[in-house]
Amino acid sequence: MPSAEAIDDLEFPTAFAEKKRADFLIENRKVIIELKSLESDPAHKIDTELKNHRGKKEFPLFYGKLELHKVLKHLPDGEQIQKKIFQKISRSIEQSFREADNQIGATKAILNCPHSSGVLVLLNHDIATLSPGLISSRVSELLTKKDRDGEIHYKNVTSVWFIMENFSLKTKKGAKLLPSIMIDGPSAVLQPELAQMLDRLQNNWALFNNMPYVAAQMEKISDSNFVHLSEMEQEHRDIRPRHEWWRSNYRNSPYLRSLSDDAVLMHGVRIMNFMTPNLLKKNSSKISSDKMAEFLEGWTHCLEEVKFRGLDIKKMREIDFS
Image (cartoon, rainbow, N blue to C red):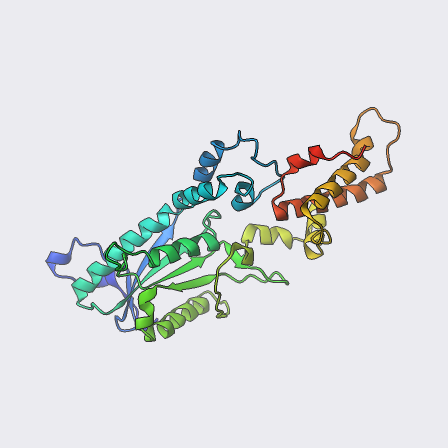
């Protein structure tokens, strides 16, 4: 951007030489930017906490990967565990806030621009654990955090812009749309020009990456609106294992969605009973391979629905069709 200045390239008085400063100035120094890259994957913190609860009888049995909240909803103290894990895995975001607030504040003092807006830019290159929904929730909390006297705690961070290079917005045609999400703090409303300046910033970022810039307002940022790029690429490969085609076909037409949870589990048990003869070594009444393939596809569809709802597969043991 023509008005951008790299702060490290500027000359400062000796008294300020050792002070930590922000990274960039834009819009004739009306906006101070501090850039932070999220580099530490906190996934191990989730595993460590869940180990403390896997022995509980309520802990669900599930197939494949499942969203954390779908696992914890089965536990009586699942909400408290969720909050505890959320705080643990989002500490790097809080640390980035704390450092950025100090660096932007120092820059305002050094350059004598107390009325400049402070923008924290968070980059997530490849940490899947730090999803768009998680980052937006933690960022919103920190932007509105207040001290005991009612004042905003991070006074120098006006807005947060986070860029996800490992997620895409979900689209029917599978087009790659990288999220560029801007969240404003309470003080942003006092600076009406800021929205236009940040819009120009995002537009320039898109142009630099040779991508279209499409602006949209979202009241709540949910992970259900996004897909990890690795999953997206797998979904749209021409050559895939048969079971992946079955899963994809079901997601396009989830015909079990209207059933109750119990009915979905009963459907799964029924299919498994049909397949049982072919799963036993000594059995003379095996079904044909074509019929078995149909049942396997139906079983895969059932597992997709079970995964979507976060059902506990252990409950299938309680269903008896004999």
